[in-house]
Image (cartoon, rainbow, N blue to C red; front, top):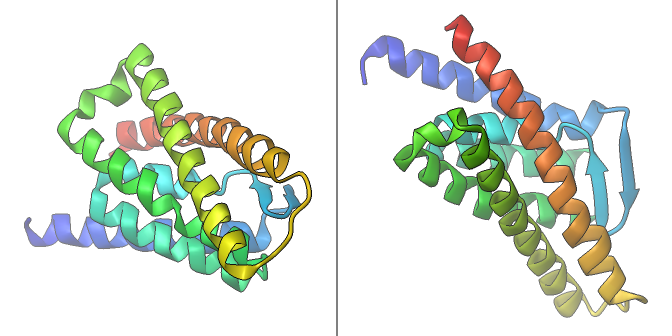
Length: 175
């Protein structure tokens, strides 16, 4: 990588990191029903980083988790944010191998859905681990984990992916 490309990579990583930290802190539209939380746009920086590089995705995901921690979200939600490392890294490596996925509508929708399912599984597992180790008794555990967190994450993930892809395609044209 030449100096110009390294500088662009670091700049893009820094910008996406800043966005990932700020969104959970300042986003006015968010729904929090622990362990579930839905902050519109909270995955956009992660998805854009994932479209660009596995390393960038990992860094932005860690920063996003810190953003949720700094915003004062409950620890179970911070752990859910950190679980994004699973879908983010897997998705980034997949796109590194098959970059044309983003340009083919059908392939992109399938990728979006599969990513949403992986995302949901990782978040549900983060909640199960948190509740199993903290001794917290949660009523309606099935509903909370599989409807609020699981299904809600798939929908939220797919919406944010679609928004991120639209932003990414506009930025890619401008490059």
